[in-house]
Image (cartoon, rainbow, N blue to C red; front, side):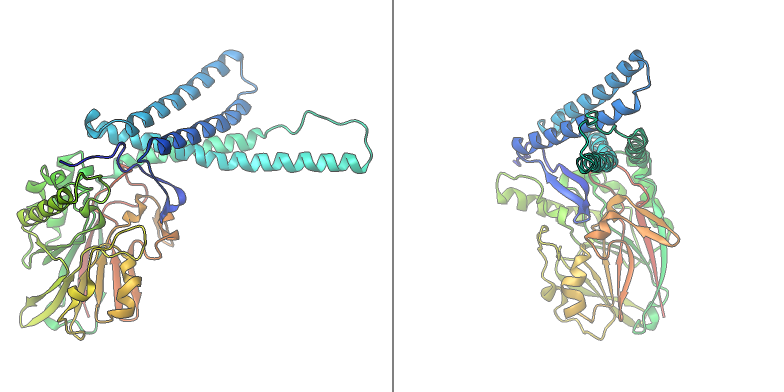
Length: 443
């Protein structure tokens, strides 16, 4: 039997810069941690309420009562929602309800946090004005003072409320994008690519996170989109589940439809090792991983665990390497052995590496394995939040992961980071859509 911690994996993605991206990473695993977060919620509620009072100054008493009641009603419901999430087991409520409850509570928290930035600016303004007034009166030897102080700015209060409200509305809108799969097409040129492999069509997917899915039909449509690309080969770079192998039970029939002439190959990501679940024993955790390996087999996928193989096309060959999760970030455990995975590989042969965490690129690949021509990764999800328009590519994740989505080139080596097929934590996508990558190899 496995033991789920009191409130498992409350990975609250707050603003510092995400889990190393904008992630002040709260993992609420103790009552003291949960109550600390509630205290912070209450402080934010009281602080924001001062702005609400300011913008309601000109309203009638009845209108103020209604607004104040709604404000505190929502705030109290958010705290109750967090308590339900934090102190109940996962089977206490339907998974869909639990997921949206968590997302709504965190969304409200982030909205109030953003609004508070404007209120702090206003308070600094008031403090400076008050101090300047005191100094002026002292210098002029005034004997009387205006003790009423400096009033809060209605403009900045409205601005803070509008900013927080806009963020919350945007996050709610993002719920509708979680199955809105986007096809990214790239042509990649390599001088050492064998002639028979020119035009090879690779579909790269990553971060399925089946434990987060709530709509089988929508997922099935995403799988069909992959098949519609008519790939020669499909490569999956880890995080099939959130934690448990059983999360795939409902979806084996859907993902087993993924077929390609040269096969489907996969590797493991950090979530596949179930490090975010409290297990009764290491044996139980190991058994879960073994079951997950059998899931890959049931799907018809060739799981590469620190190993390499030759892909043949016509009279030519290229090398495919698959390594278990290796991270350049201390908070993520590394399981892989790149030396073992690369053993026997001819450094002059065209080589593709599947490695889940893109920070592995800086940790080892660039410095020690120049023979890797193309590395495929996932992991970051692009934080599921950001902006990607012509001329602007931004996400808070970039403040921790130098390379976080799309194509990167250093010398003769290329790294491609998929934005993820699924989602985790936040049940949505805002600006960074779920991705199916089509890579065509050329000259």
